[in-house]
Image 1 (cartoon, rainbow, N blue to C red):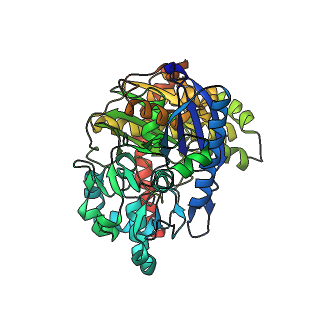
Image 2 (image 1 turned 90 degrees about the horizontal axis):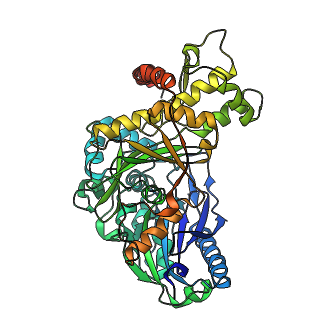
Image 3 (image 1 turned 135 degrees about the horizontal axis):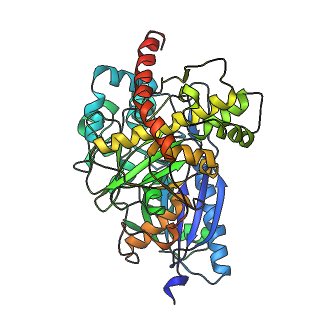
Length: 495
């Protein structure tokens, strides 16, 4: 059997969909199958998945993908997982869910996070675990359950992530990989063991959490599940990792100082390093990839959403038309500065209460100026993350970029100018599922290194920064930070 014909299925359990990516031995994508994973939201901040629905969708997508591979004479040799970070659900003693799976977007623990930050304990937790103290983190979610649903907390046999549950149903092993565990706020990133002080705050003991395993750990597919999938029983199933770290692997951004930038509705900038740690001001996260590699970076809550908001707010105009208008405005938006915090903000502030603002508004400014200023504000936010990475001894000298927002020339030009470096834009259709497949090949000995880019991760275009635009944004970046801090102080009594 030729190595090139052997396929690995990367199963990506995302926030809105489950995607199965079939990757052959030459690192080519054979097929991509999606199933919806509805995110149910509520007025008290709930944002949850039904774990049974996600499991059923994963089974359907894998079965369809396996059928496509079989029809082409391509044997599936392994499965591997990727998942959105920060999920949490409770299981009873038989492994049945007691709760929905809380996603990173669930904000019910915002008051818990706010209180921890006010007491001054947040920075110590962040430096130990690499995870910001924020409502997204399972640390704060668990503390919320302990405080608000103590009976349920007492009945829970095991707290786990959504990927842990699906992997358990596929293999019979209830484990948490170190990558997803490193984003819980409960793992000491320096020892890769559960962190006692964090467990105390969460109100949970280590024996009620899954066994910790490396992301490269391989288990075997259960016979009944294999039959349902149309795959051989005993097939290797690699535990996998978090979607952010695997996105770096997928786009070839695992070499030192090479960052992965993703820009969709929200955004993120991440770089890989061979040791854990965060900056002194606790502005970046630090999550595990595999085999001694750690991903440092920050996610911003507001990216493409700011253009969508502008189009809706200015009379329901078409986003593409509005971006063309904004492209006619000179860099700097004629002195208009925007804080684009429509959805609060994550990196580098980790502040769900952050508010948006337009500063310096004059009669001559119109919707095109405001739109450009908002997009420049997103670029400034990403540049602040880049600066925080430098402070964490994780410099960025090149950027591999993906995401729907970058299909717009204006978005790509502004972000390149804000970072003042070229953006090497890569295909993003396969995403973290592609990274999961690469991780499986590495785990099974078919890929020699995690730090050497594979052919599938080549950039298809490069956007270089305009020097004048880069200079203007650099000149006002410090002012953007000062304005955030001032606005925060003014609003504090009303939050």
